[in-house]
Image (cartoon, rainbow, N blue to C red; front, side, top):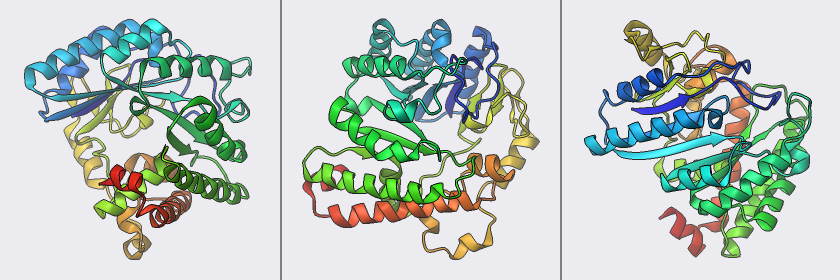
Amino acid sequence: MNLTLSLTHACQLRCNYCYAGEKIDKRMNEETAMRAIDFAFEYPSQEMILGFFGGEPLLEWDLLQKSVERVEEKAKNTNTYLTKTLTTNGLLLDEAKALWLSQHGFHIALSLDGNEKMHSTHRVFANQASSFEHTFSALNIIKKYFDSNHFTIITVVTPQNVHHLYESVVELVEQHGVNHFTLSPNLYTTWDEGETLWQEQYARIGEYVISSYEKGTPISVSFIDRKIEATLNEHCRVCSFGEMEIAVAPSGNIYPCERLIGDDSGAVLLGNVHGGFDIPKRQEILRARGCAYSECETCEIQTRCQNSCGCTNYSLSGEINLPTPILCFNEKLSISIADYVYSQLSENSYFIERWS
C-alpha cells in the first residue's frame, strides 16, 4: 500500500490554481499519523512509497520526522523496500532540514514554476508578493544536499505563464544545473487560444531534450519520459487509485489520491484510518475505474494514454471513468512530442543507456 500523508491544510502561499482547498490551520495529529502508517502496513507489499503532501508539509516538521521514524521501523520489520518523497514549496527548507531529509533518502519535489517571470505569475503570498526568491533559495539548498536523481522541479503550466515555459527550462538547466522537470499543465482552466502556445512550447522543449542528449548532458522532462516509457512497455503506467494507493487527510479521512483531498469534503471518501475502509464505497469506486468513453476504444494511442486516471477524470468531469477533451489534447500532444524525440534519438548512446 502506497501512502501519502497530507499533514496540514495550511500553506504560506495563495497560488490561484491550487486544487488543495481552503488554506486553513487544520493539521494532522500524531495519533492519526501513526495510525495511518500502521493502517497502510496492514496491506502487505514488497515496496511502499511514503509521500508527504499538503498544504505545506514542512509546516509540520516534527510530525514529519516522527512519521518517517515510524515507517522506517515498520519497513525494516516487514522487509519492505521503502521510498520517501516530499512535495514542498521550499519556503521553510533550511540546511538542517535538507541534511536530515537527505540522510533519510528522500526524493524532493520542489514547486518552482520556472524562472522568475513564470513563477511570479501565480505563486504568490497572500499580499500578492512573489515567492520566487524564497523558493529559489530552497533550490540552492537542495542542490547542495541531493544529487540530480533525487530531486525534481514541479512546474505548473497555465495559459497565463506558458509563454515563459521554454525559456524557463533552458535557464534552469544552463544557469542552475537542474535536469529533472515535472511539467504539470493546469487542466482545470480554460485554455482557448493558449493551446497554440502550449503546443509551440512543448515542441521547443522536445527539440531541447534532443539537443541535451546529443551534447551528452541529457535532461528529463516528465511528459516526454512517461510517454517513451509507455511506448517501450506498450502501455501507460496506471496508478492503483484507492486499491494499493491511498492519501490521508489531516482528519484521518482516506482518499484514493492526494489531489482529491481538497478541503476534505469530497464524494470519493474511502473511509477513515481510525475506522477502516468504507467497504461498499471503496468497492464502488474501484469498480468505476477505467475509461467509459467509447471513442477511446478505437483511438490509436489508447494504450499509451492516461484516459483512465481516476483523479483527473473525476476532477474534470465528475466521473471516475470519463475523460474530457482537455485531457485528450494533453495526451495527444505529449505522445506526439515524445514519439518525435524517440525517433530522433533511437541511436543515441545516452538515450539507449537511459532506456535499456
